[in-house]
Image (cartoon, rainbow, N blue to C red; front, side, top):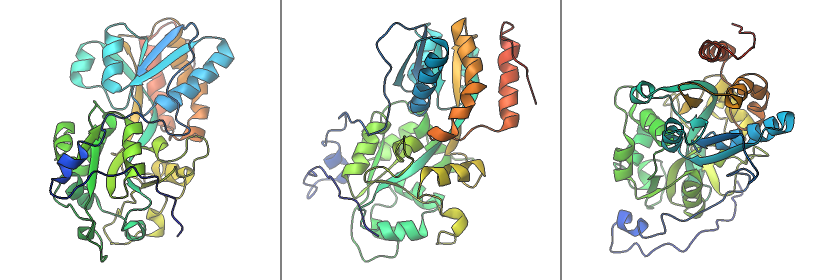
Length: 348
């Protein structure tokens, strides 16, 4: 298998110092823009203001452009993370928050109202030039093996696969309030023993603000492992694998080899089909939400309605899995119950 060129930054001298100390000196806060990722709106006047999760940001940019072309309504979209979006909307700084997770009880008590809009997926990520990439691609890793890596129980690639290598593992995490990182912790720990974001941060060799910076770290380090939302692994426009970043295949049945049913990583379309068919687990697949302070107001309410109706036709083609028809009908009904002025037929 031919591998991509590894555009690797010069690593720090790791001899004589801990791997964690070495990596924490390596420019953790650097900015990075992956090809195909959208990170802002135009600077014109706006009627709807949206902020929040990095995971749904590319899809929201598509929706904003399509809605503007259909209605003439300008929409300003910015990221910052789910926590930022929730804070902004509850403080009336924006009209809509994007959320990469369900609202928690405290947020609901403050008046947050959220409806599910699509499904995004978190995947483990490695570099194509990883010293055991071929073995990982053939055999995959179980949830338990990934947990041992992200909790610093396993620190060498030869402890994961049967290969004659002696190469360290460098784990990269998130330093911001990340819904993706929370989902990853839920997945790693299993149903009853989830790992918190703070725990995973403490285990990691280096932590970064946002998907793009994590993707840069993996792109530039053949020994690294991390996690990313799906559209930072596959090219947003083509659906092909992006740069040096590759998903970590999951050995779902623990057999030690990827079966044909488990091997769906070559392109984004195959992967999304696996998500829709429930072959890829949830978590780390997760619903994403749009949210308002008590209710969506004026044009924001019309946009929320559009997202759950006409806007759904764009979801699959832009790297996300649609929520089921039954779930979509439930969310439309919840939206209609909260907003008497919205006129659309509720089905399901």
